[in-house]
Length: 315
Ligand code: PAZ
Figure (spheres, rainbow, N blue to C red):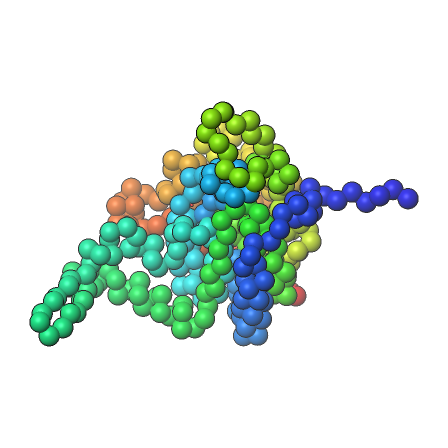
C-alpha cells in the first residue's frame, strides 16, 4: 500500500507548536460562535494586519510587512453597524476597531486636565465630544451586546493555528458565516529546524534560507468551512497583473470573491472579482476629503453578495 503523503499545510502544523494562549482562544471562539449561532446571527471572521516570520527561536529579529490593519479594523465597524457579529483576528498591536480613530497623540489631545487643591478631574474638550461620542456609542453597543470577539496573533504560525480553530467553530453556522481574509500573511518562512535557538550574532552576514508558506485557502474552502462565504484579498504593486492574479486565485481555490488592491491606492480603489463578473469600487476625491472610507462601500457590497448567497444556500 502507498503511504499517504501529508499536504504542505499539514506538515506546517506538524512542525509548528500552537501559541501558548491557543487553548484559551479556542474556548473563547467556541463559546462566541455557539452564542451567536443560538440567536441566528451572521458572523464574519475578519483577519487583519501582517504576520511576522521569526529568524530565531528566542526571537530578537523577525521579518515583517507593511500592513497597519486599517482595512480590517475599519471593516469590523461597518459589519457591526450592519448587524453582523465579528471575530476580529488581528496582529497584536495593529489597529483595532473604535480605538483606531484615536491612535497616537490624538486621544491625549482630546482631553482637558483640571487640578485643584481639592481634586483632579479629566474632561473631554467640548470640540472633541462630537468626534468621540459616536465612536464611543458604537463601541459600547458592540461590547454590551457581546457581538465582537478579539483574538490576536503575531507570527505566521500563530495565524495558522488561530485560523483553523476559528474555522472549526464557524463551520456549524454554514452559509451564515463569512470569512473576510484581509490580513497580509507572510509568503515565506524559516523552517523551525533551520532556525538558530539564540540571537543571530552580528559578526557575520547570516545566510537565511526561506521556504514557501503553504496556502490555507484550499483547506479553508474544501475542508474546514465548505458552506461559508469566503472572501480573500489580493495585494499587488503592479496594476498590470492585479486582475489576472485575483482571477487566478479565484479559479484555483473556488471561493466566492477576491478583492484586489494596489498598495499605493488601496484606500481609494479596489476591484471585486467573482466567477462571473468583476467591477471596481472607488471613492471620489470629494468623498475622501469628507472622510468617507472605502471599507464602508466594500462592506455594503459584500453584504449584498452574502445575502444573495444565503438565499440560495440553505443549511
Ligand atoms: O492593513 P492595511 O489597511 O494597511 O492594508 C490592507 C491590505 C492591503 C493588507 C489588504 O487589503 C490586503 O490586500 N490583504 C491581503 C494581502 C495579500 O496577501 O495579498
